[in-house]
Image (cartoon, rainbow, N blue to C red; front, side):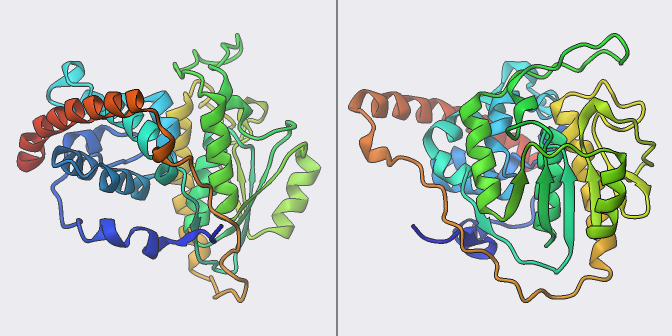
Length: 318
């Protein structure tokens, strides 16, 4: 199989579709800042593959969002819950274009090294955001496998604030997301617990340490996620943020990782290391689908196209 597509190459076709767009209300409400306007426009005219590309350009976590939903974006829709188009679009694109939503990308390296502690929703989002900014990223996970906290709904603990509702993410989506992240250059090291002594060592070994280790830690991060020096944190490991749900944790991690990456970029030097030689994750071809499955897919596409067309008036006046 071929190596991951370079970021610009992978999106070259979709880029031709892009132009300055008004901010749709669903974007204003999305915790992760995802613009569903472009996928909606493309869905409305039957360009579903391009819609999947547009969603992949916004986030690598389309599969996770298909499981969790994006309640803030939905709440921002003027039609409200009577028009749950976003949730249906996410599920449809996952079912029909998973090869694109889970496609790995070859991203450049800046020469900076970051370590992320924890592979829950905050850890995965932080790892991707830092990787997008050119960092070589290592994720340390205490459990024997990564992403385990996404596989179950949050458990209420008497010592913490009420847990925000977050449905469990199906195991296959977690696995495919981890595969995509790995093949995009993020290294996962499981069965690697980090204590206070190891934390100090990591701060000396990496340009950036990002803690997203869950409720086991209590770190006094500021509004930008900075604890001190090169140590940043986000999610439920931060003091007074124990009740965060998965999307809230991801949003906090994205904000903190952007701030941390900006600090690193000020002194970043080009790296001589290769962009990556890992192989892309390829989904089963649609040619293998049954005739009945294709008919069901066509019916779903027609219904979604009609729903997407209802979004156009909103997008034109946003």
